[in-house]
Image (cartoon, rainbow, N blue to C red; front, side):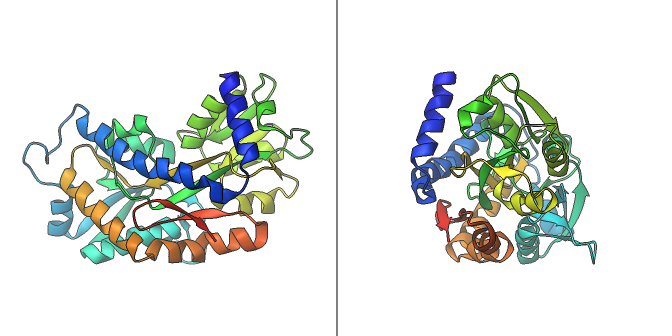
Length: 309
């Protein structure tokens, strides 16, 4: 594992230009098909598999959709402090989808790490926010075949940290935080198996631990960096760019293929018309690049990652 970590560190260190993420993006796009197949071939039945009503049929007939969300990830999904209404990049996509379908979304707020079990338990119809396409998650449900967005993940370091290389974090004396149940937590344990992993319910809790020196590092996605540096200006970003790229999209009931096909078709249409690109620039991409020189990705017409700007 240490050799693998060294290889990851050396590879990332030698390919800092974000444009070189092209090959990773291709793999990410291919992973959508793999994730869908894994979910489709898993044991389990739903009303659709048994010839019953799809969630999509229920939405169309009732004009109502129950969607599981965690509204603590600004600017992706959060409550507007003035109106108290759900908003953000992801919620704008979700609301556009529901509007095109003629359906009113009803949001069920649950901490992110509990959303997957809640979907299986029937607490809501579909996740209304995005999740990374982890293969283990694809055993429990279906991911849309087109992403809502790609997230670039960075390692933040506590104030005054002397760490300069990725492999220095793989040490028993190092504590690394991430949101519980997130892909950052999952990947962090793979990259730094010797470090102490501490999960928190929210990104804010992770940053509090880092900013106060209770943690040495925090794996965080690009969109959370502005708030992190605003609250704790002394936090450092490990130099060298992103440590990995994730593809995130809708997660829905296992084997509800009718819903999966419609959502995927809708997403592909939006991607080919550059709707996601425009929303990403407005909500996230322009600010990250202009203020912090952080390069991100948008979703291409085939679901591939396209460097932005």
